[in-house]
Image 1 (cartoon, one colour):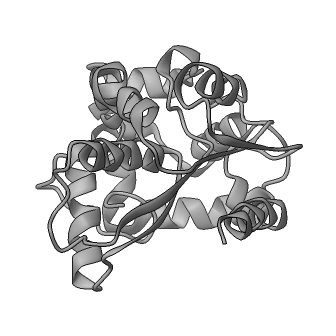
Image 2 (image 1 turned 180 degrees about the horizontal axis):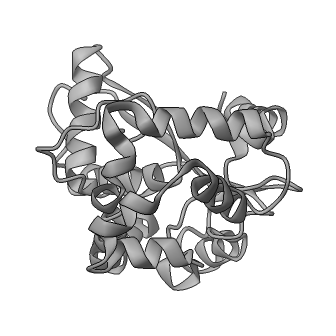
Length: 231
């Protein structure tokens, strides 16, 4: 996703989740991807649900002829009413967001990452790598832009994305670390009971928000086991 990690962080980009979905499709087209199983995490969960909405509305591009085959969502704030946003996130979304970025230093980011993750399974080395990636192309000076995806969630969650997820006939897997302090495990139970009642649920015990980093073996085992059931 643009704006994150090793990806480009352009100035002339909306960082909206709708445009992120457009960008994902452009990348797939470039590499000749015509369909497949969709695995998403965090903000990517909302991008994935936008793609599900397009799938349901039959507005996916014609070259994506094999279509989506299954959906696996991992820790992400798919239900905003159950999301425990951090104070810094609220501030970044406010009129002070532009100025707050100047106060974002390594120690502050490390504290925020640990707070969101929910347990102590992330090493300092892993956090340092995340910080260095954030510095690329001055990404640390654009957090007030990238955080605006939360506004998209508020706008489209109940009117477009969750209804599409409720209507889809695609296999859905909710794979969640139960130590996440932002996208809490209650979110999975809500989605299972209220939205996608046929979904397969996997709870990863003792796993935090950044599950691929903090508990890669548990995450890979959980995701791999589900794909095995699909044949």
